[in-house]
Each structure stands twice: as structure tokens, then as C-alpha cells.
Length: 156
Image (cartoon, rainbow, N blue to C red; front, top):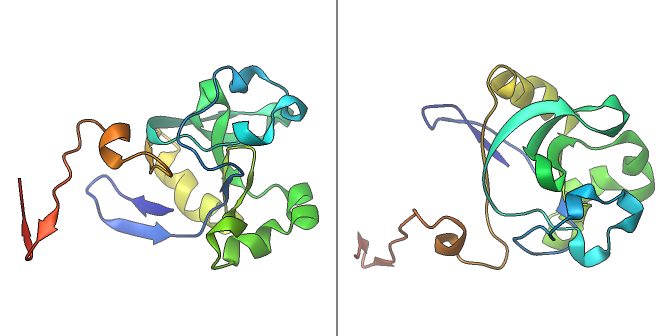
């Protein structure tokens, strides 16, 4: 995850954990299911641009909701899951597949969440961009015009 201020200055960068299944779309209705009802293929972190705001999840845990309808949030690694699933070690692994363990939420280090993310999003929220796994940038962000680089110059 890369965290930028409102002017585009890079503030921090950390590894994250994502949904078990690669993919760019949430399964319709997944946000209304109980965790035990969500199948492995439904555990994706959807790609797109989201207006993220703080709110409460199950158990009165405060999270940064990225996609409330589909129950996708940014939050620290859950303490109980961290031990049994080795989430802390997986987060630090250089292997991309090791970073796929969540039900779709984005897990970040606790210190990053408290020191960087929370202060920046606390008052008004902010925009979160989740880049695609399988689709092109143009498909996920239709207003974005991607230019191929040839000979060091952008082509149109």
C-alpha cells in the first residue's frame, strides 16, 4: 500500500494482505453473507476507486470502510487470525501468493494503521484506489488514459 497526501506526496508504503482469490470484482451479495457462508472464489479484494470512511464492523471494531456494501475494509491484522494463519510472516514474505489470505479486506500493520492511515482519514475520509489483478487499468478506471511508452516518449 502506498499512502499519499492530498497533493500527491508519498507519505508511507507498507506491505498488505488481500483477499484469497485473485479477481477485481466482488461477488453480488457477498457483503450480506456471514463469513462462514463465503466461498473461496468470493474472497476477492475488488478493484476500483472508493470513498473510504471510518465506521464500525462486527464486534464494534472500528475500521476504514473501503466498500461498505461488499464488506471490504482496511484494518490491522486481527490478533486471533495472525497467530493461526501466520499473517504477520505472510505480510513480510516476498512471495505475492503469501499475501492472499483475507476474506477480501485489506490488512495492514497495526503501527501503520495507527500512525499513518487513521490520522489522514479520520476527519473526512479519503479516496482509496485498489489496482486490478486481472482486468486492465482502463477497464477498472475508464477515465484513465494509459499511454504506451516508446523510445522514452508517450504515444497517443
